[in-house]
Amino acid sequence: MRYSIFGLARQALSGHRGWQPAWRDAAPKPAYDVIIIGGGGHGLSTAHYLAKEHGITSVAVLEKGYIGSGNAGRNTTIIRSNYLLPGNNPFYEWSMKLWEGLEQDLNYNTMVSQRGVLNLFHSDAERDAAARRGNAMRMHGVDAELLDADGVRRLLPILDFENARFPIKGGLLQRRGGTARHDAVVWGYARAASSRGVDIVQNCEVTGFIREGSRIVGVETTRGPIRAKKIGMAVAGSSSRVAAMAGLRLPIESHVLQAFVSEAIKPCIPNVVTFGAGHFYISQSDKGGLVFGGDIDGYNSYAQRGNMPMVENVCEGGMALLPWIGRLRMLRSWGGIMDMSMDGSPIIDRTPVDGLYLNSGWCYGGFKATPASGWCFAHLIARDEPFKVAAAYRLDRFSSGHLIDERGQGAQPNLH
Ligand SMILES: Cc1cc2nc3c(=O)[nH]c(=O)nc-3n(C[C@H](O)[C@H](O)[C@H](O)COP(=O)(O)OP(=O)(O)OC[C@H]3O[C@@H](n4cnc5c(N)ncnc54)[C@H](O)[C@@H]3O)c2cc1C
Image (cartoon, rainbow, N blue to C red; front, side, top):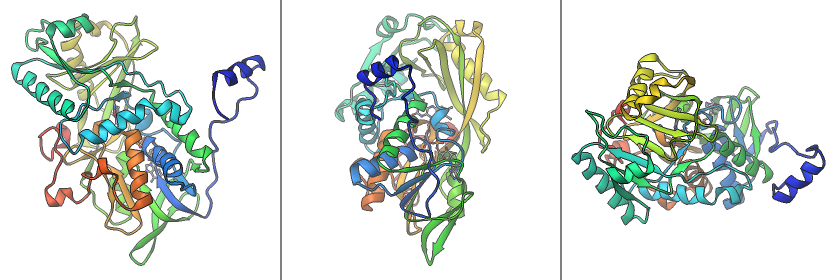
């Protein structure tokens, strides 16, 4: 069923009785060409591009809960391509270009809002770093503007510019960055993949792998064994646990990242803004709530909830930037499990186990990567070679030393 203004009018006139479910909730078949483990954004986008770009439609996406119940439905919805390093920059810009055409591609309103992402700086040294990043972006054809304090003031007069410790000296703005509605992205990819014949199987946890010699030829699941010629893992924070079932130890740590939403207030924050002197980022949802977050909890965990010290830490960042935020009531907070890689950049690669492919290491930034991640993972699975913009995301870079250390902080996930 295609969505259009005429279809909407028809449904309105007939009492909205003709809408069909957006995707098929499939029962698993005994075998497929490709199985994707994980019904988050990355797993579903991979299935969509496998079907659309490579004509591979014998595909199952296996999800242990319901689709979007992981990080895809828990993130703060920020999309951007303001990366410094050549390994990352073309990949995230590829993603941004896919975001810009996503609603037409999926025939689904994913509420992509290019409201701009502004990274503030508070010292001369931070200005130098922002200028360097902005120059690198522009050399790669990505939009970037360096604003002084007056430029920021024109966009966001509501910020505290005269904070004694962290006065705002300016910001690096990417106007094409912004937000997209995270669960609509999940539903849109699910619907598009399902309409091309992909089976989306919910409540189907992968509990083991079926091997024939050195090759993996299927998975054991809570809904029975399912065989496939190729199997892709896109399980984000569960990567190390699922890889361990195949005998692999990954350069990944799992940490909780929390997010928060306040009560709704009048529109006052038109862009996405990040504090430069600590880890705090904020935007305002269409309903009026302020959506914000900060650092990961500093220890490893698989629990989808966080702890109080990080709540305090995030709110301190908020108070430094917007002192009036302390008078708002917090409505909700939640946590998701991040797959933190040892250099802060992702992995899209074959594994040493035949038949098994890996998509992981997304850290804080995997939502914005959703379209490109799926595009590149589908290309890898279909053709057994990396797509050009993801060629650097190799698993063996951690042993060969070809790290993509965007933050320059080394193997310290709690600092990424
Ligand atoms: C609080 C928070 C804020 C964030 N903010 C942003 C942001 O603003 N911008 C941004 O770019 N990124 C952000 N991220 C990161 C982003 O959400 C993730 O990197 C991205 O969603 C990960 O890919 P995914 O969508 O496929 O993961 P997920 O949605 O987590 O998908 C993985 C799926 O695998 C399933 N699974 C796990 N084990 C199994 C198994 N054994 N069998 C079957 N299924 C299994 C899980 O149930 C899950 O649904 C944020 C994350 C969090 C938690």
